[in-house]
Amino acid sequence: MEETTLSIVALSAFAMIFLFILFALKQKRGIIKGKNYSSSIVTYEEEGGSKELKPTSVNYHLTRQCNYKCGFCFHTAKTSYVLPIEEAKKGLTLLKENGMEKVNFAGGEPFIVKRGSFLGELVRFCKEDLELPSVTIVSNGSLITEKWFEKYGEYLDILAVSCDSFVPETNRHIGRCQNSSKKDHLESLYRVRDWCIKYKVAFKINTVVNTHNKDEDMSEHIAELSPCRWKVFQCLLIGGENVGENAIRNAENMVVTSEEFQAFCERHRDISCLVPESNVQMKDSYLILDEYMRFLDCTRGNKDPSRSILDVGVKNALKFSGFDEKMFLKRGGKYKWSKADMNLEW
Ligand code: SF4
Image 1 (cartoon, rainbow, N blue to C red):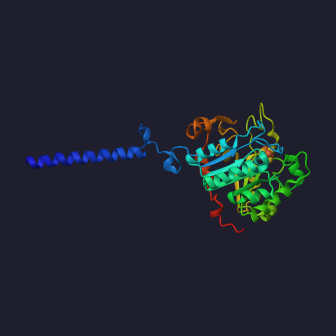
Image 2: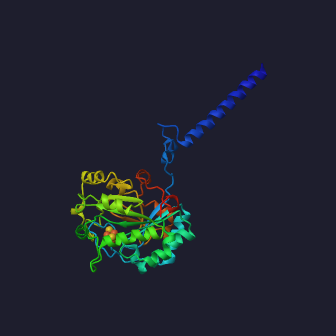
Image 3: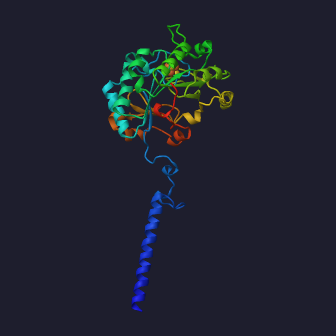
């Protein structure tokens, strides 16, 4: 009888311990809902995002200087600062150590610094030394030379060239051209596309839909140029950049409505590489690093800088980036971004 009682007590104790462990595990994984446990909330990690922000894909705007004067530009020439190259490499190394898989070099015009050699060395460094899966550039295309492709093309995965119109006059209205030169933007675009094919770099086109091009049908030319991706953005206002106090540009009269943006995308729906990006999808879904390697937080409609990753480290600076990782994933920010994976026919 005593033995039976002991067995019951032992069994009960075992069951209670088992239930307690089960409860603790569930609580830790956030399965128990509706109670005031901090870990009971189903976290974003469980929805496919990462709990701790990771700088998976970073846009490094290494300069604000540019030879074009687009009316809607939202990263304007407010400074002429460029980091010393060793500092830039140090920052890129820190980003890699914190999980960066893709870097996109942007500007201003990134080829303007030291005639492209600064950019070229960073591209080589990121691919060869840091072994990043994806190294990409966004450029207006006008300052790129074939010599640059000969020297650095092998290290570059994707080159995106901005093109908002195939009508030269529209490009002039937008400001997609150089002040002092009669060089046509479209000539640069086609020349760079040909070099991309020759030097095995994936070619991409970026378009900003604004009041000057909203009714254009670009289908024929885009099909002919055959980019791997055609990113179509809705003209976006950012305080201090292209609207409001201290702004160098005023793009208020270039903004299009959501309906106009949708109509542009609908007109081009047969282009299979089209990737539309409305203001909502775009605003906080990019990790933007400025010329001092500070993250820029756009959540309040301006570009509010964090401290530099070179001073406070990546994790600390990331807390002030305003980055919406969920929207980044939702808008398809993660895609096949290494040229090795793209099955491109050269
Ligand atoms: S090409 Fe136009 S949008 Fe791009 S940085 Fe220069 S001025 Fe700005």
